[in-house]
Each structure stands twice: as structure tokens, then as C-alpha cells.
Length: 117
Image 1 (cartoon, rainbow, N blue to C red):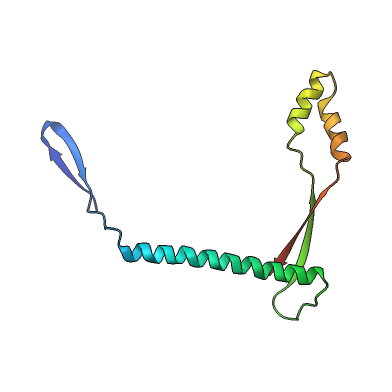
Image 2 (image 1 turned 90 degrees about the vertical axis):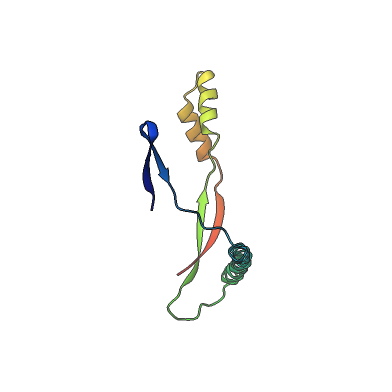
């Protein structure tokens, strides 16, 4: 808890309690936890990839509380849209209409993820 002390010339100083030192044990535990986290993240990635591969190959799912399925998404990347609109307008074209035409002729990118609940 901070305390306030009045000093000459009407200046106010706030005194803070001493900060606890960081121990070597804390640092060791932190490094160990970070290492374990990396290991766990790799294990999760491998387990997810294994389930995904088996689902793609038609594996049956054991009945129970949990469910696993492949979720498929398609998207089009249009990061270029603002640039194309500006360029089209410089060429005295309707930029929005031109971009809509380009987007309609762009093939979707397929992504597949595993959903486990």
C-alpha cells in the first residue's frame, strides 16, 4: 500500500513498497512451463492432423459425447480491391463494377479444418 509524505516546499512524494525480487526458481519454472507448452502445442497439432487425415479417409466415429467432423470453407482473396478500383477510375471505368466482375470470375480457395466438440 502506498503512503504519502509531505516534504518542504509543498511537494508531495509517494513511497512505494519494496518490489519482491524475481527468484531463480520462478525463472526455472517459467522456462520449464514454456518448454512444456511447446511440447503440448506440438502434440495437439499432431493429434489434430491424425484425426483430420482419418476423417478425410472415411474413418468411422465411435459413438459418445464428442463429435468430430471436417468443416470446409471457401474464400476469395480480394486485398487488391482498393488498388484496382483506383486504377479503374483513372481509366474512366466504374471501379466497383469492374471489381465485381473480377471477383465473380475468381476461383474460391478451399480450406478444411477439424471441428471437435
